[in-house]
Structure formats: C-alpha cells, structure tokens
Image: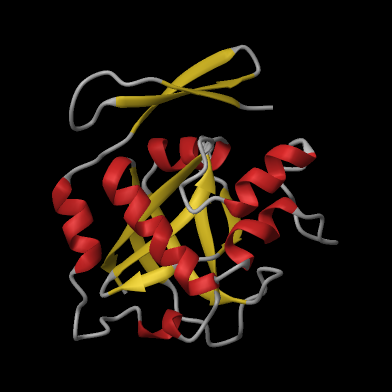
Length: 194
C-alpha cells in the first residue's frame, strides 16, 4: 500500500510527494506555474485533433511499467485543445508516468473496452500541482458533477476502488470537498502525435 507525505522544497520542479512501495521510497517531481493555470483558462476555438475524445466520458490511458509492459486504465478527463487533464491517486500510476511520460489515449466505456475504430493518440504527461492542479480539478468537477467526488469513494462491482480503506467520516468530507484531495494528483497530457 502506498503512503504519500507531502513536503515543499523550493520552486518550479519541487519535490512535493514521497511515495513508499514495499521498502523503497520515491520522490515525485511536480510542476507548477501560473502559466499552467492561465493555459487552463484560455479556451481554444479549435477543438484540436483530440476531437474523438470530446464525445466520450471515459478514455483508456495506456502507461508503461518499468519492464515496458503496457498498463491500461479507464479514466475521467477533460480536453482543452490538444491537452487532456485527469485526476489520479498518487501511487503506481504517477510513478509510471514519472519514469516514462509517453502515454496513449483512446475513447472507451467505463469498463475500459474500446470500440473497433477507436483512434489512438500518442501523448506525453506531466504531473501538476498548486494553482494549475486546483484549476483543472474545478473544471473536472464541473464536467462530471456530483459523481466526481462520490463515485471514487463507493464500491462498484468490477471497478477497483483505491479509496476503500478510508473511514466513513473521511469519505463524507471528501465527497463534500471542492478541492483536490491530498493523496491525488492532476496529470496534464499533451498530444505529440496522432
């Protein structure tokens, strides 16, 4: 089980999280800037090449573990031009993104099943924090409504619930919160090829 402890150490590119897996501890490098937050506010008139994802509520994120094996995860997201934002728990996925930021995205259903003609987008990811992460979290909350903070906290058959160990009071606090959860990260994914 992963335990994240946040600490601040400097400016841009500062270490904000320590994650422990087994006996090893790793630092997560997170980026923050006012420019990131401004990017979120600037709406693009052109939908960009990620148009296929606009009509889907779920995207299948393919990241790669240390041995190069593909790991697929369905995610909730929002598209801003040629950039995709999503929230994830600080843990194995953020470590995979740290080690190898190149990813693939395609539209899918809630179970991660893709259609026959689902277009694959090759992308590069960056883990955000601070103002940019809070701004992206607000937009994601607006897109998914009440489900954004409730669904990750309840047990759904066939879906891995990463917050199952939280107590009732903590789940209730998180369901009411509009802020980014302390053990979560927002990831920015920029398309580099279609």
